[in-house]
Length: 69
Image (cartoon, rainbow, N blue to C red):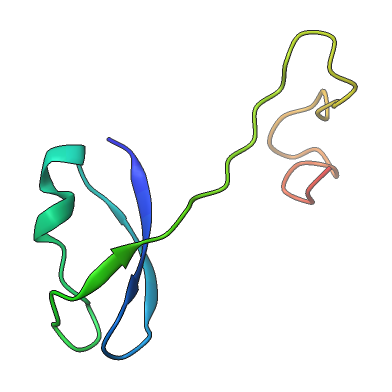
């Protein structure tokens, strides 16, 4: 199930929610309960073939793990 970003048009609260595409129109603000929410453009990252992006080659317990690279 995807995670979508939303902003309440009444109180300004920004939040994300894991929800199916078919239920996005039923979202209410967790702060004020308003149904006047707008879906925000979400940014995502993908690595393509031949990309210069490298990830640490270690797992949990490695000094680079969890440090953002």
